[in-house]
Length: 250
Ligand SMILES: [Mg+2]
Ligand SMILES: [Zn+2]
View 1: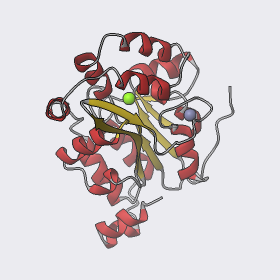
View 2: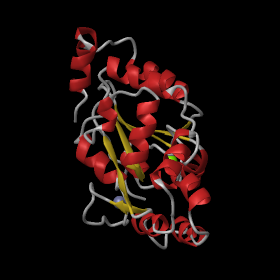
View 3: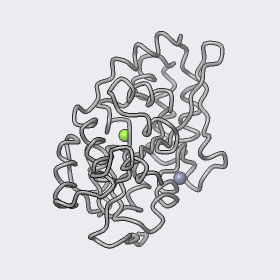
View 4: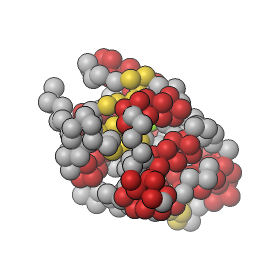
């Protein structure tokens, strides 16, 4: 197993990376799109990815080609996806404490922006500086996936290479915190100091000897991080929420 890097000093402010599908949302939006709108061959492609025979990049590209839908139908599906009710408060907490928060996802920017906007989460997490995700566009009733953050495939053939984003943005700061739920997080956790995991990611960490904390909702994560950062209010957070937001820009 690769040696886990150690970032920052324990007393330093954490930097937080967060998965989207199944973590911020209660359901995996890509799975919902596929199970409702794609031709059934998407299951075989998914199995190849789960078994590690193909990367998420090839998986998503081929799966999206199987989807036939209209924008209104896709939007209605997205608008019915439930979100962890603790997430907006967690975003506020991170901003008040000037804790940098990034969303890293194999899912799609269009979907993520629409859901975060509906949930009242402010623009910074939607604007591309704090959101690293695949891209999705319509072309004649079909969905086309592209990977603008990683035009050249990584060694794992990820759609969005989470470990690469984490390395690029943390730059030795830390401790590095990761929050996730699934197999798309399996490479990311190797780069992190504190992992909050549920579902398949929790099972994966257990099977591979990766230390993690189980969680159910963002209220659990917020409670744990409050303990970690203690009573220390950041100067930026006290001065003004706008400055705190800028301080989090990585
Ligand atoms: Mg997920
Ligand atoms: Zn990768």
